[in-house]
Length: 110
Image 1 (cartoon, one colour):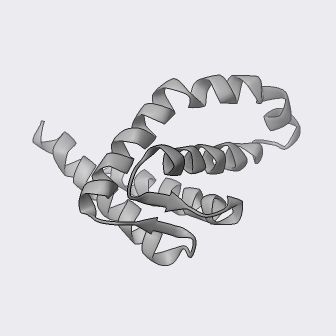
Image 2: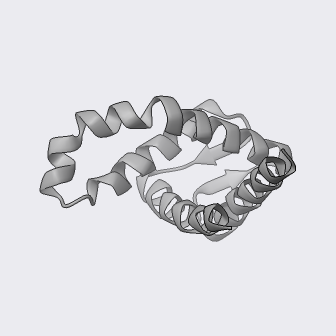
C-alpha cells in the first residue's frame, strides 16, 4: 500500500516536471497533479485499449508510431477533464506524453 502511494506521489512529481519543461502544459498545484495522475490512470484503463484497438490498422501501417498520437490525444482529453491542468495544443501534448511515458517507465521499473 505504501509503495502504491509513493508511486502516485512520484507520478505527480513527473507531471509537474513535465509541465515545467514543456511549454503549453500547465499544472496549478500539487493536488491538481495528483488528480491528473488518477484521471490519466482511468483513461489508460478504460479508454486507451478501445482507441488502440480501433486504430490497430493505422498503428500497424506506421509501425507503432501512431501510438504517440493516441497518447497525445488522451493527454489532451485529461487536460479537458481535470481542473487545474491544461494542455494547449497537439505538439505540447505530443512532447508531454513522450516525457511522461519515458519518466513513468523509470518509476515502473523500480
